[in-house]
Image (cartoon, rainbow, N blue to C red):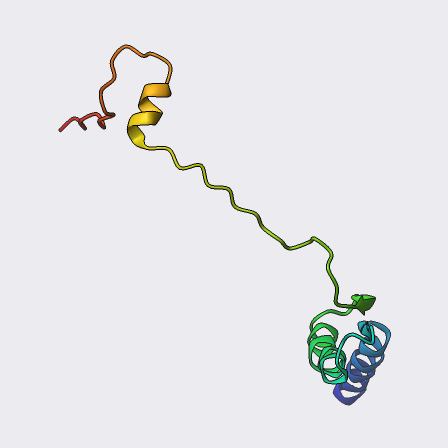
Length: 103
């Protein structure tokens, strides 16, 4: 009886794993080197395929200028005295001090 249950369990795992498999495929533009494309399709796709059972995708890889992933930084350098002078009037123009904590 134990052997029969073990065979059923083994068969279920084997056929279940075959039915629920991931398939990630990278298609590379000619601008991508063959070694990079091979790395994507073997190592990276292999990681996804062994981790997920329901990940299916065909991903096209190309190089080019897209404007994505860029960052822009702007600097507006103003001295502290100019900043305070341009601030709207307040009750007092004293530097901020943290209140004392009660002891």
